[in-house]
Length: 123
Image 1 (cartoon, rainbow, N blue to C red):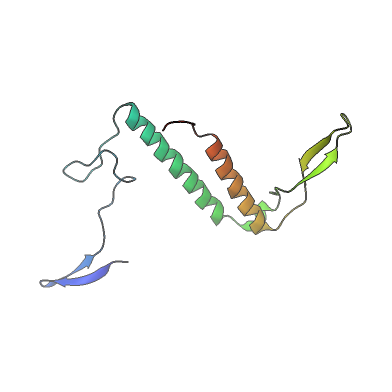
Image 2: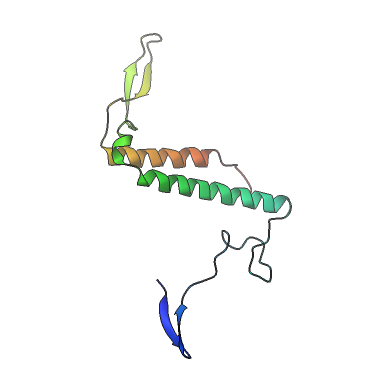
C-alpha cells in the first residue's frame, strides 16, 4: 500500500511505480512505453515470457476453484499382474482422494507437463 506524504500544500501518494508490460523488454521510449521485441532472440524471449505467465495464470485459476472438483486426481499407483501378458504392470488407483490433496496433485502434474514441453539445451 502507498504512503501519503505532504509535499508543499498537497497530499501526494508515495511508493507507486508507473505500470508497464512484463518487466524490461527492450527498454522504453520517452513516454515510458515498452518497446517491442526485435529479431530472433527477442522472439524467443517473448515466447519464454508468454509460457511463464501462462503457467502462472493457469495455476492461479486452479487455486481459486473449489476443492471438491479434484477428488479424482490421485497419483498413487499399484502393481497388478496383466491377464494378457502375465507381467507386472503399474496402474493408477482409481480411488478418490481428499479435494485439497487432489488439487495439489493437479497443479504438480500441470507443472510437470509444462516443463516437459520446454526446449532443451541452450536458451
